[in-house]
Length: 628
Image (cartoon, rainbow, N blue to C red):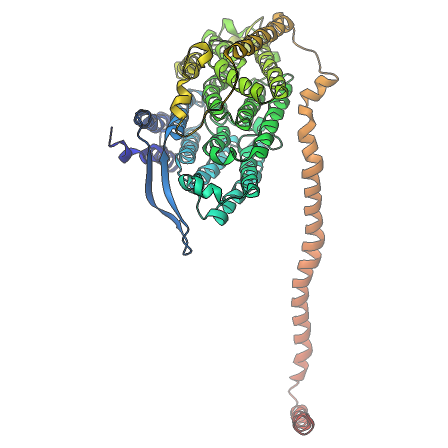
């Protein structure tokens, strides 16, 4: 176990090998070999991550230096370094563990793809996992940023995987561009740190001596810019609209982006930088308000969506808002805890939706489903467990993490708690609306679809079962003292992530738990009576129409950003580019051409003209000599 540090470099390198092997050999590998290799390398990384986690749990952390990545004469040296501590070890388990289940699931879900495309798909997935591992293992902001950009690239490749569909490629471009906007903020924050303290190594940035060199303005500016980066990657207002469109990719990709990897990068970065953010109280307030607003906005939109994957996408945006609320209230452990539990139940529900879409022949509209429980019992039961977990029913993982976020909001400000509790009720309502319309009642699809309804193969149902078990037991790593626990996760993370100091009595905590539980059960009951017996809504009207059209945010962005930019670009092309720049360049050419044509008359071939010019030249020289 003491020699595990020698193998840490293999954790990200194994998926990189899988990417290279599947990518370069895509024309030659069979589907079974490509799938086995793509899944096997991630399983290997998971086993190594498990060994690392066990060593970290025993109290051994590591800073591993491999080589100097950037070296500047003035003394700035940025190493290619890995940091293995409590936070990175936990994220390694989430990324490789859930990543492996998604790879395994993909071997069955993508079986209709050609051999070449199948291998390409697994190559992209492996590159995605490699990038995310680099992001969480980096010991400085530059290594984190390399992984940060890597997952952005992979999201573009995977969302636009079916690139012959223009809508899918548009969604991929949207994700890529909106992430670049956030990434600019991230980069500016890194440059600011370098300018002020000359280092971006975590251990050096977060020590008291260097933090004291930063003014209050520096800390606010750096943390706000880092938060701008997080809003892009973790889909917060105003940069959240790319995430629902990311549903264009294959369903396992949606699970990978939304549950285990990309969208949690912003949460990880802020939790890692907690020493900076804890000093920036204004930034924390902004984070809490933006997170809560995002949670409420996305939950309200999810109520009226009918595409099964779109509902889950807006649910992800909403849950990320809860995590940012926790970060903004200084409750970093609760945010990381919710990342963990959310990874279990959201991966479960995305893969469950993929199982449904697989059985329905590609249909994603829940109004055309119904009665699926009779045909797909494993998918139905596991999906129900996911719905219960995300709703926060006691005993399931979501209850513990969401209760901790709500308690933190309550101790911070009653208004934050009230809005967060209302959002939690909306979550329970729209998730059970989805479950009731899809799995209960009678089937509303076509006869052809009814004949093909069947449970998914074992490669798809085994990951569902494992994730369902984790969605039940995953929360018990964070049982609060009020319920007789010792919050093992908070104790484990304590060397890296401080626990929030809440002055809530056990009686208050019991009251908050009881209130949220009763209201959530009420919301589920309301959904049951509203939608049982296939009482699907008619066409949306009034406020429902606004929610169905997602508050018209995309249309607003189109009007105030996209169209003005296109008009500006068109003007610049037609006037500045064609007439001014091209006119100047072409004018220079025409002037030279015209001048040359006039000068060539001097070369007439007449000797008398040449003698005359010589005499004139001599006269000019004499005049200059005599009079100037």
